[in-house]
Image (cartoon, rainbow, N blue to C red; front, side, top):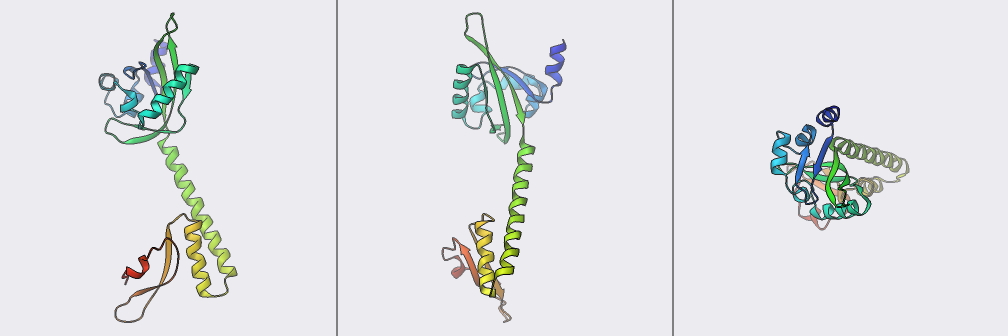
Length: 199
C-alpha cells in the first residue's frame, strides 16, 4: 500500500512495459503526460512504445540494446510523442527486471517532462545572442569611419553573430512612390534585393 501511494502520487511518469513495448502499468502522471485520460486508457492503447511514445523508433531500438546489455539505460534529452501526435522534450530512464531464469520479464522506467526547461533554455540563448548582437553593434559604431561602413558592418553582425541568413538596410526616398532603396547587405542575398519592391 505504501509503494502504491508513491506510484499513484508521484509527479513524474512511472511505468512498466514489456520488451516489445506493451504497457503493463503506468501511473496517473504518466498517463497525463502521454495525453491519455486515465492509466487504464494508456494501458489499453499503448502497445508499442517504440512507435507510439518515442519520436524515432530507431532511437528506441538502440536504447533497448543498451538496456539489455547493461541492465539500465538513460535516454538523455529526446523528443517523445503524446496520444495526439504532439511532441515534448523528456528524459527517460529504465531498468531491466529479470526472472529467476535470467530472462527479461519487463522494463521499469521513469519519464520526466522537461519541455518547460528546454523552452527557457532556448529563450535564454536567444536573449544572450541578442545582447551579443547589440554589444557588437555598439563596438562597430565606435570604430566605423563612414556611414556606409557602419551599415555594412551592422548587416554582417546580424548574420554572423545573430544567426540570420541575410540582413539588409534601406533608406526611404522622399518621392511620391516612397520607395525603400537597399544601401547595404550581408549574407545570402541571392538577387533578392534586385527584385523586391518595398515602400
